[in-house]
Length: 177
Image (cartoon, one colour):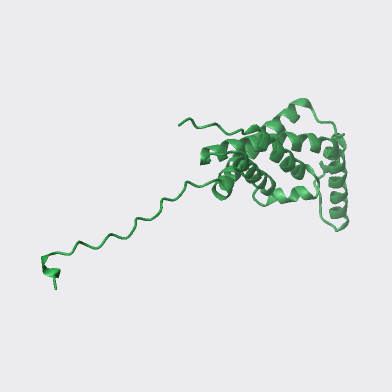
């Protein structure tokens, strides 16, 4: 029987875009502090979409593939969303250090120079390094979410019906009455 390969790309693009968006937004991204919630959840959602569009039985390998692709797409979307928000993050950090200083906490002397030196410009090398690291971490967590999603949402093999009760033995010579 010829097994048709599932289409991994469409569910990964849809779920990865949503997971990357949630991972890149400033306040909502805190959900990723809980075991990469948005990435694992997005990969599980991709596995659900894959199960919905596939007629065959999905394996954990299928979940791992769609999860890894979801993680990579999520990392790219996250980086693209985080770039315009980066200057506001620097300003938020400056305000936080000012607030901590007003409480009487000693801050390192080079902290002002560090914040002033970062003008919000991200070098291409640093961007690519961050993208590579994010893609690797998100892909690993996506594999986990994809396997979990397939185990929850994937079609199971049909269960064989239990064997019927054995027939009673035919009447023997001692059963004649």
